[in-house]
Image (cartoon, rainbow, N blue to C red; front, side, top):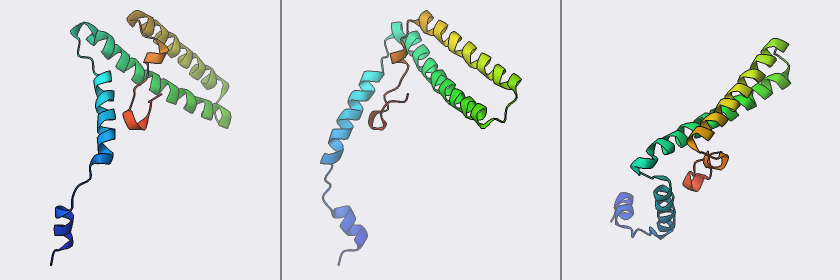
Length: 116
């Protein structure tokens, strides 16, 4: 008599449902990874700016929550606003310097969807 482990190991594998996902993942990876030496600097800048944009959006949402909760004094609210505006301005400068559009500041995470 076969043990449950033997049954599991000897069972026919139906990997067909995973074949679609594997092909889609392969297409997504080859579409994102561009190892062209001429575009490495721009690609790296795009990745770094995407991460910075994600962090900026998180910080902005947290700042809004803190302001709406009412636990901050006026000077702190002013400082938060100035800091976020300065960061947004610097992001615009960097995007222009590398020729990156807003739409490019996103990552396709395959089955998980878009990052931003």
